[in-house]
Length: 177
Image (cartoon, rainbow, N blue to C red; front, side, top):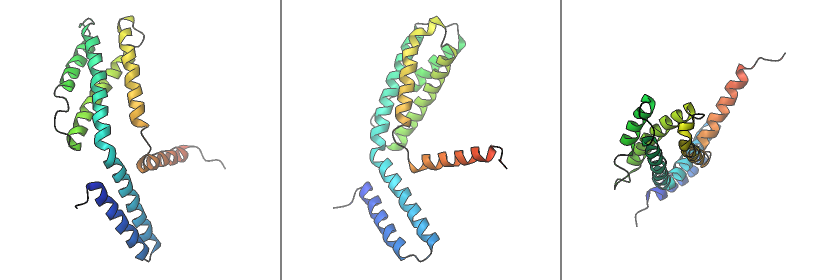
């Protein structure tokens, strides 16, 4: 029986581990270990990517659809509202459909996140205006969704980026003598 994609990654990881033991220099061993970490990260993402994207897209469509319906009830004299409504209509067209390739799901996800960003900008601009009060629960739901997406799990890349950020901050601080 032919191995699936995830099993192929595991086979590559195993081969990398064996090769890493045969390499004499510390640098080569470190590079092999780095490749192993990259493959492990890829395997973990690959295993759950379509599932997460599919459910994220459905939730984003619900949030943006609810926002669109609420915005339609508001006076359309504000150009920010009318522009956002057009953006939401375009973003909500099509749906996921039958194409479950990661590239198609990621493209749909990006478009919906772009529309969500515009929605949140409007919400922040109108947060204290009574006419937009009905939109604030949608704002909360949008932020909850973004927190869930962001907190799905820190990867090697997140930790590396955070470490680099902290190093830059430390370098910008005045040095004590």
